[in-house]
Length: 298
Image: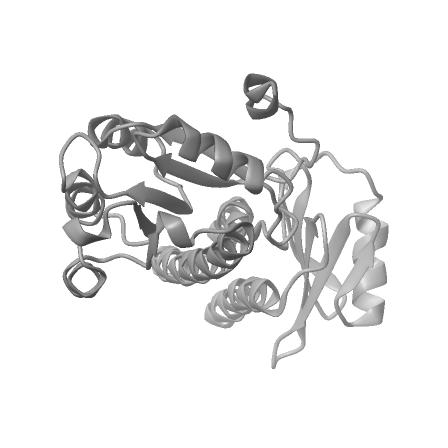
């Protein structure tokens, strides 16, 4: 069997894969895991494997890749506790609380499960003799769900913090337009955390169009290129007064209490989930509130 050919096989799915690191001094463990999970997908995304054969190799690899979703970690490698020391390095020195860590050991007596679970920040403990294809699938489903949810919460926190900091600096309409343009770029970055349901390519069009009494107040774009007629699409969304899709574009509609209407246009791979829509609406609501504040101060 040509293992090298299998490991270098190009993934045809163009959605960003989940990064998985296997840390084990046994080459066969790497081969068997990759083969067993070769066709696995979670939320439309495949797995991309990285290999380390010692704790020191893993340290170098994890310093380079800060967005690893899951680590499958052997306990006994160059030392009897190399894996446990790596856990402390990840959670302590790297301050990485997001990546899910599952220990796998062939010598459970050297690291009893009850003690390890109690004393180390890990998400699972498996004896290698217990691992099957089905148990691996179960492990990845649960670990990736957990990683996805943690990433979403972190994105919300960072997005709202950036929003509040930006709002404090806005005191005139020209600033609002600049703020809206920067907001779109930031939304694209934040929503990238939702790439399980939503992928935004930064070179594609993102538009926020805000009207007050049928007069355009803001029409900010983070990129002018588009595969659709954006003005026509904005009119369609405004007339529908609801979330609307056209091709790969989504138009999110929002209307403020003082009758200011807003449409945010984003290019997506699939339909937006409720959390992503809510995040866009929070940003839009604050832009509309800023417009009202500035207009009222004139």
